Image (cartoon, rainbow over all chains, first blue to last red; front, side, top):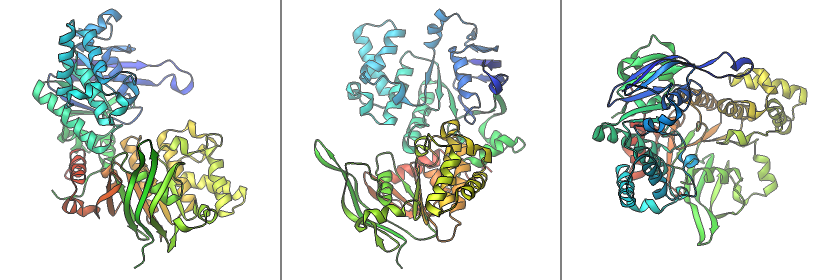
Length: 257
Length: 266
């Protein structure tokens, strides 16, 4: 579904920043139905990779192929056609949901932009989207500030699902949330994958999130992928010192089941 | 035995158009010297307000509606405000969540560390400056960073400067409010390990406040779970899954389990 080949992204800058590549030859492959976890520390290049995949940023070299189409060299006017099939969820919903709009309008916006539907059908789809992310229809009347962080992130996911994408890119979707909400959002993503066959690329610094949810993992450090594979084998691979460092930093609970 | 810190029946209220509301509504906590208490709960559960009340740093408009805060045998709520203020930094210290706003933006971090030492420890400026560099090394930061301003540092570095401040003061009661929020996992672990060293100091007691039960578990021997202004569960951390009764705590335990690596992966 998604192929990233040898992606390099350099930013022009002064001094130390000049020669450092944010992405330094990254390759990945996502198959339909994958729950792919991309793990790394701040500054590893995870978000730059997501932006290159979305086509918001142009890579310095390398290719991104989504459903056989090359994203990296796509003309600007053809991007919306791609975005109908590939959507993104960002870290802090309170920041990017327009505070002056009610939830109904926030969810209707991408439906109007991407799908050619009648007014009534738009309304029905808004309700359907809210239902898919586990929010009651009455949420449509609320403003973002009246909702908790977890509910806001559900609204953001409803917006992302509205155009009917096949790939959902989630960049730190739970980092701004309290732990029980983090769990609920991860369960929601898992349900969407199982019920609807959605493919998910999860970008996170928290290795703990991935174990129970992802079927593939890649660990990124300083613009490179240092290890990849199925979670069990990747995390037990003690040869790669960075993976070991990540595993040792992640809390493990000394509770008996 | 008399506890080092005992909070009983604490209520904190705010005026609202609908009358007084009580975000902290009858909190009981206790802590021995040498103990580490994890105060866990969602945002809005009242955990930070409880800590601020212990420090005597409640925001304007907050009303203490009852209860007692007894530290080392003295009731802090009955204490003369001038004497109470002298406890800050000497007897108790809190590292705040927003490490960017907790540090003075107009001073280099080295000067801020040194100033604290001059004011609370009575060191000379020359000695305080040398000590500031040592403290930076103790939190694994290069000593030349004493010449930097807070905005030049990353979130993890700033949080470590706050821990260095705590090291400088060696307060008998140290509170850390969300010490890991906003940091990546590796940096979180560095900060938590530095805080863990604090608990080896003889006679020191610590309160760690966080929404993240996983992080709290690395430091705390006991946990109190707060929900809507009350403590709904309290237990030794290792016994929490057996002792928990409140649905909120059970949910928190389940979330922690699902978002952690299994014990078997090492």
